[in-house]
Length: 399
Image 1 (tube, rainbow, N blue to C red):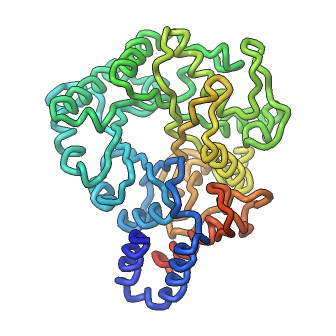
Image 2 (spheres, one colour):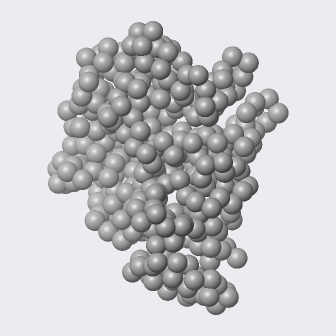
Image 3 (cartoon, rainbow, N blue to C red):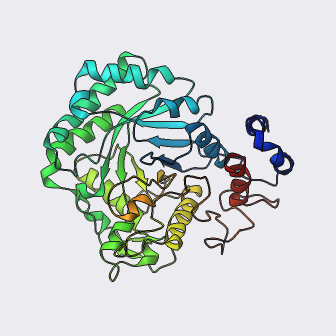
């Protein structure tokens, strides 16, 4: 309730907010009596906050949006100081991204980067991870590949020297394209040409206790072969599943199969001591004419069904006791991203703060409906749905 009152004071500081006071007070009263579920616990998924756009709201407004959604983990593709300052005191955990790999592989440069981009914001802003490089090993930049691990080591050592390694870890994101084989999941193995990089990288993860991060998009598999890839299978919808003959485990969705293929590939290199987290996954709500499956309905189904599973603490068939850890891509549609139209349409929200589709997790809810219950939390009391709460709170920012 205290946090809600703080939010109220923030909203009402704007001249246009007076007309919203009655509605917001009603929302607070409902919350106090247990009718609104969004404030009871943080959501278990995180959000990728990209900023390749010229029409996004300022970070102070974004901070309010994410607090209203109770999202407690955010990944940036840089270390934007305006964002980190805007989230000070919110308790939101941040993953920030480092700079040029060749530059960062020098110890003095790495320490200067951490000193400038991480240390000043702690502890007010909770920075818990630094990502050094994104999908480097699936690219063709040999210099970047060779500098990846040295840069990660240099950043980690800078954290040690500054006494920050206990609260901030170091990792890097990889594409599923680092796998030479991913089907069936038990046959997962890394590409042979990447072994010289992957083996010491996994050793580093095991040594410092940081997770192996993977960007996984079942959408790409479906778009490439819609006639052979089952849409229900990639959308977490009911389907017969696919049995892995190597383990006799059955998979009812592609994302879990991809995660377990990574586990199998790491085990093949002698590592059962490194966790796997999804640093990006999502589904576009629109695309070019040849981008089969890029629709609002499919995007809503993918993210809604995924969030239900994450909220339930579900693990994969190979690691049933390890809850799947996901950062959804992305918070906003980004109108300046290059490439096909889908690249600009992964957002859960439009830049004006309205949702692209309904993320209500009720049984039977569909895009554009207003479900009556939320699938995130259980309660014996009736609840206002997640989307309704979002509409009320976002109105205070954008009307």
